Image 1 (tube, rainbow, N blue to C red):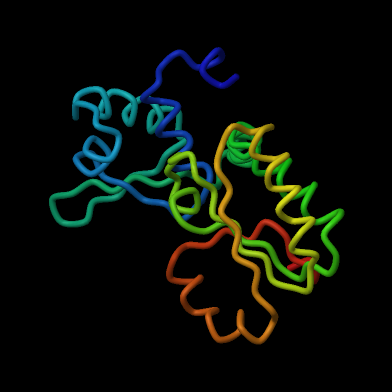
Image 2: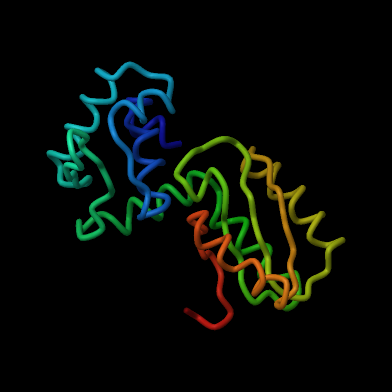
Amino acid sequence: MLEHLITSKTRIKLLLKFFLNPNTQGYLRGLAEEFNESTNAIRVELNRLTEANLLESKNEGRTKIYQANQKHALYTDLHNIVKKFLGIDQIIDEVVKKLGNVDLALITGDYANGIDSGIIDLVIVGEIDQTYLRVLVEKSEALIHRKIRTLVLKDQKFVNMKDKFKNDRAIVVWNSKGE
C-alpha cells in the first residue's frame, strides 16, 4: 500500500524508521549501512524530509543526528499510517479483545527501533489464554505477512524485567490503565 503512494523505497524506509517510534534517532552513515543504500540516496531523502519539517536534525560533534519532528501537524497521522502499514493496529485490537486479562502490551525489538525486519516482538503482561494467543498470532501473521514472536509475563515477572524494556525502547501499544 505505502509503496504505491510513495515511490521512493528509501523514503519509505526512513518514514518507517523515524515514525514508528518517536525516540528513534539516526545519522547518515548509520542509516546507509542499516538500509544497505548509498549515502547519497539517504542524504537526498533526509534533506527532503528535513526541508518538509518532518524530521529535525541536530549536530553532535561532527555528526548530524535526525529524529522525527513530533511537533509537526502530520506527525500523528504519519505515525498511525506506519502502524497500519506494519499491521500493528490490527494485531493489538484482535489480541486485547479476546485474550483475557491483558494489563499491558509492548512492541520490542527491531520494530520498536524503527526497523522493519519482518519479525514483530510482542510482550503481553497479564493472565491470558495461551492457546488462544497462538491461534490469534497465526491469524494475524497471515493478515499482515510478518512473523510475530510473543512473550507472556505475569505482573511480578514484568516488574522484575521492567528496566530491560525501558532500555530497549519498547513501545506501549496497550495499557489497561489508560496511561
